[in-house]
Image (cartoon, rainbow, N blue to C red; front, side):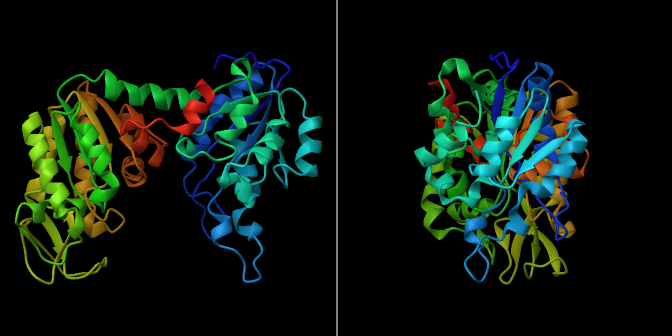
Length: 400
């Protein structure tokens, strides 16, 4: 971070969009933990911190009377946990731009932390409203964007607010710097062989990413439901598996492009199939191109898992985005687990590995492999778009 924060109030955009249970307890605090170093560094330098974030989509889930469900979406749920992580008192303003926010921000002293209420309580946030962004900017002397997970959104608190600060009064936080540095490492400075592992439900969600992989990958591994659209493109029988009929031609064209570029594409040889989408379904293992009618592929099979793991272990650079199956159901989690362990094994032998995307991150967390891979991105959609080569508005706003 290039700013001297001594005596300054720093408005810091963090991504505290964390999962909560029905009692509003945090079930995964990764995003909070990742933001802590930036906050502590500002405090250490003698600055004060005004935190802003969104939580959920409150304007899409209104109460019956049309009002905002503040009990469910308030950031006040995070104060106790944040205080524990920072080991300093955390004040809370029950608004992000109103009297409460203005008064508490004005009274903030060096070394103190103030958390503002959910920015998405205002429709102006997602609209990228300039007047709303100006009110946020007026609370502080400098702006720090440390919310990589929302960098692909041109929202008021992530992008527009930065227009109110000159180059000497805005910067990336430490998490943002790390995210950009690691993404650039795989895109621009990767050591070969490079293996890109992708999964998830839809080819349409990952098509731009797959196209981008052709620029620098040696191997592309495709798992998850999206693999069955590729199987269909190769004239396979996929039973009741989830496919995108309107993407079959696109999948066929992609396979041809990969062949022309000399990039090896690995599809699952076999699949764990079920007669219904349920944890207690009847299952069988079948070749992925010969899935019986009435059955659907819900995970890669043992032969595919062995092949994928072998390719990963021989790689020097690995990018992994998306699960190999319906990871949340134990019967269909083995493929994802095998890939996660292979990524950790390759890393131990000296490979560089980056894991991004909710289910992939959940897998390495659940298997306690987070510290056994090189980098775990908090970005999700933002990381996808950055890898696709898009200029993210949240990043551009800091640089211009």
